[in-house]
Structure formats: C-alpha cells, structure tokens
Image 1 (cartoon, rainbow, N blue to C red):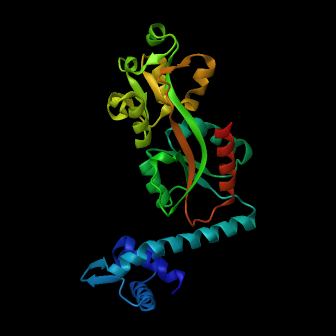
Image 2: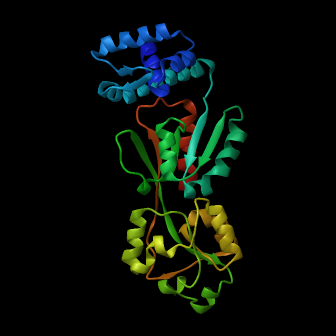
Image 3: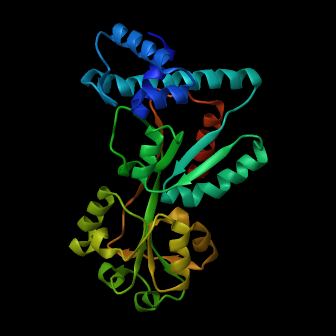
Length: 301
C-alpha cells in the first residue's frame, strides 16, 4: 500500500466513476484499475462493487474512506509544510469566526496581518457554528474561534479554551427603559421592546430560563436575530431594540457612552466560553502559532 494508491482510491470514491477519476488524475482507466486492484489486494477485499457503469462502495470501502482521506491530506500538508519551512515561509491560514469573536477579532486580525505579515495569505469566514465545523472537517478551514458551548465534544476536534466573556443586556443612551427603571430593570420590562441577539447555545438558554422564567427562552424572546453582531449593535443604537450578547462586542459604544449596559433584577450571570478549535492530527503551519497568540492576547486584553 502506498499514498498513490490511496489517492487514486479517493478520486474514485469522490467521483463514483473510473473514467472521471482517471481524467481527474491524468492517468488511463487501465492504470487506475490496476492501482485500485493493488490496494484491494493489500486490504484483503473489494473496495467497490462494479455493477455495469455504476460503482458503489463496499462496506470495506466505506470503512476505509475517511481514514484514507485523512492519511492523504496529512501527507499533502506535511509536504507543503516542509517546503514552506525550507523556504522560510509561514504558510496561509483560513479561519472561521463565530458571531462574538468575529465582532472582536476580524478587523484587528486583518489589520495585524497586513502590518506584520503582509506576504501571508489569510482568509476569514463567517457563518453559523454548524457550517464552520463542517468546513473545518472538510479542511476548507484551518481553525475556528467560537463559543465552545455550541460545539459537541468529538475525538476529531482539539478545543483549546481561551477566555470566558461576560454577556448582558445593552440599549442606546436615552432609551425609555432607562428613565422608567434608572436603577435596576426587571426582566419583564425588556419584553416590551425588540430583542436583538445572535443564536444562543442551549446552556445559555437554560441559564436564562432558570434566572427569569419560561418567558426568557431566547427561542421565543428574541425578535431580531443574526450572526453579525455589528449589524445588531447598529440597530440598537438607532432604535429601541435591546441587545443581548457578549458585552465585549459592544465595547466601543459602551466606552463612548452611546450604549448603556442594563443592570438587571436579578443580575444576569451568563457568557460565552470561547475556544480555538482545530482538527486533531492536522499538521500545523507556522502561521497558526501567530494566530493563536494573537487571539489569546486580543481576547484576554
């Protein structure tokens, strides 16, 4: 068994056709058939059932597929990483950021890279945690920074906890609720206004219901929802909507006084537990350590 045979097998499994796989690999169909036959001999059984023009993976083929994909990808990354190190390069980096981390990290990270590592290719992806986890597993992303409470523990994921950030309720300065309740705001008073939030984890939803009762379930309470916190903050600054989420994402408005954190009765104790998530077993390029240090420093500060 060698990497070439595994790569040929992956091309066949992904295309479902000997002719398309051979074309993708720039080899003849007979050469591809011989390569697959050698791999089947090494593994002790057929990997694909050839039924006319239709090719279906056998149980052995299905069991081999994911492991073969991981081995081939690792070999490719090892070769790329070795070449970069020989050339003194740092590689490229594709990262996914959750809603809260995106609001706090995206612009500072791009600015930092433009100033300190202008030759390195970086890409930032936004979207739901579920979509970004799929992209990480398919190696379309190299790392994620998300609320770990929205991620199920899995053996193929490395989760490095960074920091827990406090969440709260925020409104614009001059909001009528501030005049009505200058000291502490009862939860029910919030329900008279639109509530703007990102999708929240089940754990945060449970905390809210424990604190304030069934009416605090975010699934029912939230009226304005999206993954882009800056858009939510803009809406809060221009309307009577109230923001629920990580306070760090609203830090500029809070610092300038254009936004005000509401003091709740009872007090609100919840937050986001941010983590850097990578795929277990992947070879890290040098630029990953730069990203890890930057994220830790930026979020801790």
